[in-house]
Length: 114
Length: 110
Image (cartoon, rainbow over all chains, first blue to last red; front, side, top):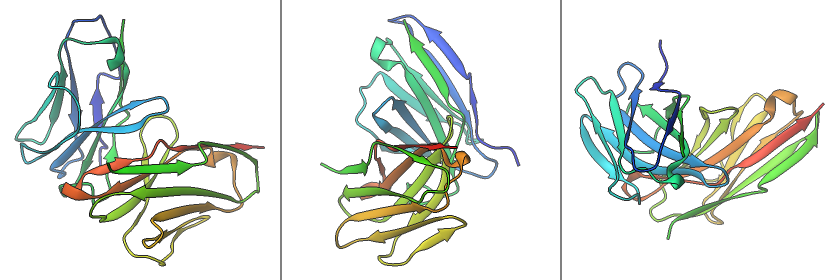
């Protein structure tokens, strides 16, 4: 059974550009959550999608957006990139919605903004 | 404001030692506490705790929750170099959203 797949694995962008990250959950999982991880900050929750609907949103500016498709694949978009957006972006899938269940994480996308 | 605090932030021990990692929380409408191990990038699930005083165990790892004092501990006995990782604690609260601690970086020296 394939795990959670995130693409691309690494990305370098310049300030002001926009970026789209992709996450394919485990087959059968309908919940996808996105996190930003920076050194010493732990995981910061961005948003969660379940059955194509955003269920929860963290405290990030509107430059961060996402969506989920009918096959449960999810994309995250960051517009007008800033240097502080450099981070590891992780997505996690689970069978049920919400954080009250085991989540399976992808390997992440390492975004560097220069 | 909801928060999860892990301690220590980092820990270096020798192989064979026993370690105890701490996670304290102040989270509205507590539902569960989860432990994850992050070795390189993808955190992997260890335990989910919902009830006080009931120990969860998997091999050399065990964890327990105290809902009165609002903390959990993760114990690792007879540590091995493969236990070197960042251990993350997360608490599920209102709106079923996870609040994450900053993690404890554990280094096991041979």
